[in-house]
Length: 250
Image 1 (tube, rainbow, N blue to C red):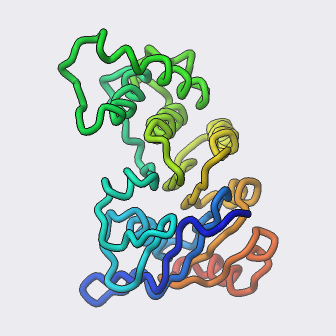
Image 2 (image 1 turned 90 degrees about the vertical axis):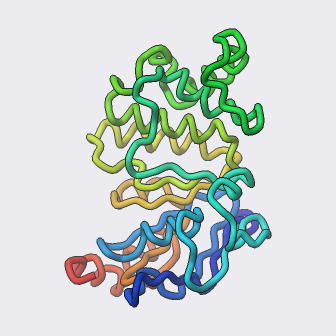
């Protein structure tokens, strides 16, 4: 267990009087996989969007690697190494898997995304792109258009493009949502491989995934932290059990 890499204190977000996230304290240790779970309506996605700066908090503070990022924009925190994926796969469907990763790697050129440059100029990124595709099990699909990939492999491609940004911390929004069992297993193995040298925070509904993968779990309900600990601890917590059984009211 490492030092705290991401910390939120008193994190709150209200929408015209409706408090979606209410005074959340969260600490994520470097080198761990940390899950954010809870019944429907618990505030998980809102909390995730606050941490990644896609929403500004109404109150509270967020620190990443000891730096206050509360007022920063998403692109700024991404440059610091806090990078997220999305619940809906976000890839360029008309580009090949290799080209998708290559677009992400162009960040190395600074602010220049050279869609109009010659193929020769962009080929400098091919070796690293192929390595990333190999890491996520897509080397055999390098030339396949992203739109033609099965859903599970599109999610793997999205993770490859996220890794191209060389994140210190990776935030995954429901990485196994909507997947068949075999795709879930593939993504779980992928997350295990890419965790080396990184910290991962994930929102996830599949509790079997959380049980087998995560070091620490934070349970939200009605916008508040209900419990935190390892799976054995939180799964036996009577309040957590009641929250899930009563999820229709959460």
